[in-house]
Image 1 (tube, rainbow, N blue to C red):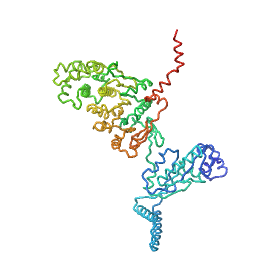
Image 2: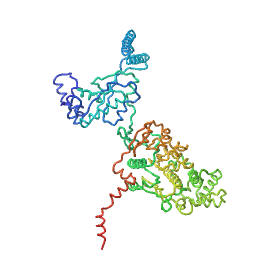
Image 3: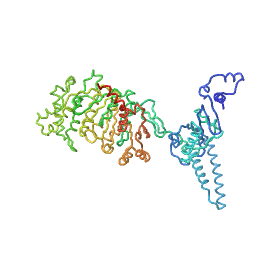
Image 4: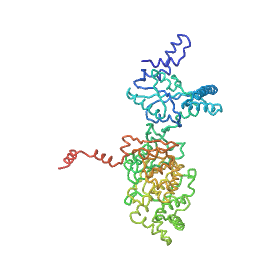
Length: 622
């Protein structure tokens, strides 16, 4: 057992001065007294520091062929370890003279074997070629020589655990044709060699050229940790946290795409992200086609807007943004709010009135444009901003204008179904939904499949007006975005929204399980190009090839997407491809899980026992 503080002080302080001065210095409190542990035990094969065991391994044999960041496999292996790399430049002239002498020795051995009729040694031939190539590179100045040493300090809670951890590290290095040996009887010098002081007390060194030394530095790792941001999960390989700020100043935009097959956990991951975004002050809007986010909204004091025939919530697409308080806060992009609203209505009406595979023609668009302006004129609204606070028309007013004009293109007949009946209440009434909560869910589960793209377009367009008036960190999540991408107008609107979102502090998150429909359109590629973050979760075999080609994945990454478990995937950001596992706290899991087995068990746990139910009945009976 050693006294760590005294030992470190002895190493750090000089021996000069009088005996009294040295004793006085030893009595002073230094940095060594602060950082040193209370006890340290050194044995033949390990160290015990405050009860925690560690073992130092020294790299003795290096692989002949390596790739950049080959030591990164140790970092990403998941073992708790410290990696210490010592590099010291050497004089090139001395290295050239030493290599020349080595070449002379090797050449002499080659000549002796040739005279004796013996076959040349393969090991010697390789050594001769390496020495000759390195000497030539040094003489040309292309390379330099470094004295390198690599030490790995492995940790464990028990002796058996330490042995297993050291064996796994040695096995990883052995798989790369490298050898690491424990620094037996030299654990204390090994520990000092692994400290940030940068001093090599073991001396297990190897001469390397610049190119070889550069491959040892772990420039990249499967970790992404910003100083501030959202916790997305942990790295599957190393267990490190993946922390990323989508609204960071160094980010191009806050857009994200999520590709996964059904049941891979994409909605679960987005719900966990939404909870953490709310804690960071980010507002969240969700277009929910399956009614999965209502429980989450209720837990965080959010708002659920249900768009269905029998619901009381309405959104009038004809609403104009209220005029700003002054020219200094005027929207620079909204030169003519009325013209922009008419243009947005053109896109919505094209979704409503166009037939399958038959977009509206130029004559039909022209007739709609004139009818829209006439509808606003009848409501007393013109290009003058002073008229924009008047009640906006509704879809029924547009229908009346079309019928009054004679409607040569049959637009009124096609528009009739959205004005009368249950759809008339949904699309042709004034706005009743107030978006005054930081978490708003637009529930479109009650709509028919063909109406969901219309509702998605209507909601996103309505939110865009709010975003432009009051920019702040917001996220708009569109679940099952492929249903909107199937329509040319919807795909065009989504692409424009992805391009313009960054300027208004908006992050667009699109989730889809139909990857082919999304990527086989120019607008889909535009959305993808405008998304700085991509989350790829488990894929089907039929789409894995397309996803791998689109995102430039390796063969191993493609296989990982085919075999990864629920809640796992690849997180692509800032050029990093990180194998991610979404981890949630018990409360987050309670709010985010919507699996039928989880909900059934949750209901069973809440149901009263039979005896309790009998007691309840007894109490109310006379």
